[in-house]
Image 1 (cartoon, rainbow, N blue to C red):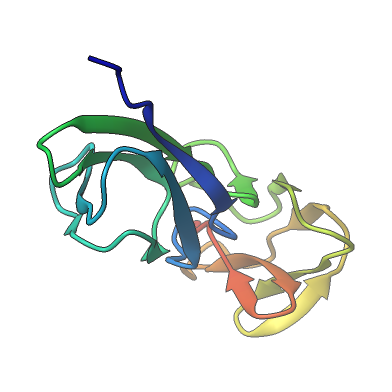
Image 2 (cartoon, rainbow, N blue to C red):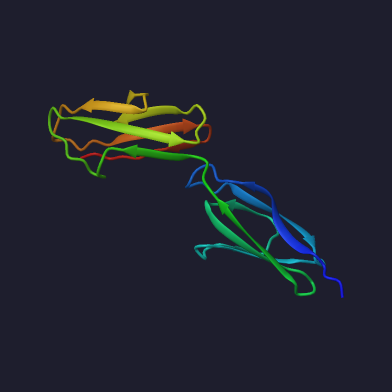
Length: 163
């Protein structure tokens, strides 16, 4: 009896733009076996499932597929989707106590962005367009929210609050 080669492989993978976007997709290529095939997709968290050959609108994470042909033979594959853009704005602890006359240096970094436009905003007003902000506080009784904004085509991300 001859053995039929049965294999599944990803023919196309598009990673998500950033960690919070669901714009990723996986296209699957099946060779061998005997059609028709059934598909069972799941993810590591157990919150995703699909019976389609190709899947889209995916978040970053690890996805598993089990393919069964008409004879009950199975093949599987695993795909890990990684975000293309990561952003970090670091001011130390989540809430940082500053007093009148204190200075604070905030550094925002990103990887994966192509020529992003950066803006540090304090109380709704842009105060810098550099990746590092050095700010001296003139009022110790106000709660300040400083946002690190990174703009690239369809995305605006922000992080950091100071008290």
